[in-house]
Amino acid sequence: MKPSLLLHVPKIIRLSLRLVLALLLMPTLHTQAESANKISLSSPSEPDSVYRKIRRSLDNALKKKDFDKAALCYQQIGDILFEEGALSQALSYYHKADPYFSKNKNPVDLGNNLNRIGRIYFKNKRNETALSNFREALTLFKTKRYHKGIAESYGYIGQVFEQKGAYDSSYIYQELALTEFKKLNDKSQIAYTYSSIGSIYEDQGKFQIALKYFLQAQKIIGELSANIELAAVLNNIGDTYRKIGNYQQALIYSKKAELLAARLHDNRQLSSAHRDLAKTFEQLGQFDSAYFYSEKSRIAYSKSYNTDSEQRLNLLQTVFDVQRKDNEIQQLEDKNRISQILTISVLIISLLATFLGISLLSRQRLKIKNSKALYETRQQAMELELHNKHLHQEGLKAELELRSKELTSLTLNMIKKNELLDELKTKLATIVKDDKRDQRRELKQLVEFIDVNSNQDKNWEDFRIVFEHVHKDFSEKVMKYSAALTATDIRFLSLLKMNLNSADIATMLAVSQTSLRTTRYRLRKKLQLQEDASLQQFVHNL
Image (cartoon, rainbow, N blue to C red; front, side, top):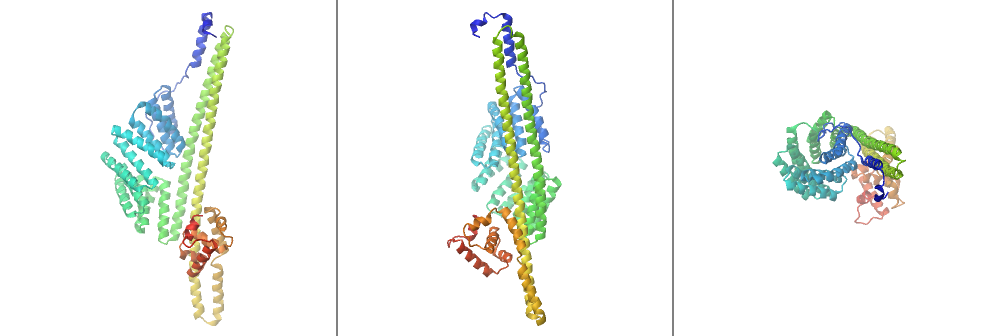
């Protein structure tokens, strides 16, 4: 209707038209009470219930247009999702909080949120993006001389450089972080920074220096409380002692980590302690103990993985359910609004035909809104499906690690069996030389029997099956270089792929060191390797 024609419409009709327009623009009424600005995150074992609590607070903040509180709630939801490993969802909530913090113009809040965003990019190995966020946060903290934020940003930047292999830069930034934390007398963060510096030296193979920093971290954390951070540091110390060859000290610290992790019911650190104990016992030649702790490590890791996965799925299911209910509520409210509009329209439809056009326009707007909500719901379902695929990939990775452990155990058992058979064969050969003639024939037959069985096909078949699980299509890749390779050649290359030394390979193949060198020479010719090319490097590049 043109504006000039409205002057000729009766007053009651104009009032009715205003009422319809008011209903179209009227915000949805809410009855929930507002909660406190900050939500306690003291229930990490039940992240889904904490999420629901924060979500209610977020809804109230958005209704009242309290954007400072809404930004904090978005950030806290992101923290819960980050802790549960749902990184893409966490990043989404941090980005939702970012514009509100920017409007608030509080450099500290904005810097803390940038550090959180940077952590997610760091976890996904997007180092340059992570570095950009950490440096921007550092600049904001410096404008307010906020030393805690400055220290944390230095530490994060140091971790990025460590991941990039720039150890000198990493050390500089960790030392800067350590200086700031010492000013704050934050012992927990001081200990954590010592541990981070120790990790830098450990990456470079400087184990003695790394050990010094790990021990400093242990001393400080030990003064605070017996918590899971102490178990992690004890694991680092035990592992470092093992790497420098001090196996007794390695066992002592790994045992301490094992006991503390068991008391705190932390299967992740318990698995790490058992894995370090297995490696130490392997170095000591105590293969039974090594296998025992390797199995315990696998069991603890499996429990940790299952627990984390269950909590993560519960949380994501809760997020999905809440969002779905929000959509259902929105759709119900939309339907109520349509009903109100239609009721009023029926009352005044006979007065003016224009109301029909307004009603149709309103319904079209609501249809578009409902289509948008449906699209968002489908998008969220696709994200959940993508996450489930990621969990499946993690399960496959865990299975591959288990297969690697099985392959190592099988190899060790075969080496041990062949060594025992070699020793028995030597002793029997001695008896053949010294004993009476009537016994020599039987003993000689026994030696030949050992020769035949020292390298049984069944053992090699078990080895081949497990090896192919760990190194997919290895045999096919090798055969592409030469069709003249024999089964013995393939076995030799497989053992070389596992980084076994010459003595162990000779034992596995039941041949002498001289024969082994001959085998290497023939293989190089078959594979047509250059004189300066390394057979070991060739195998590892497959």
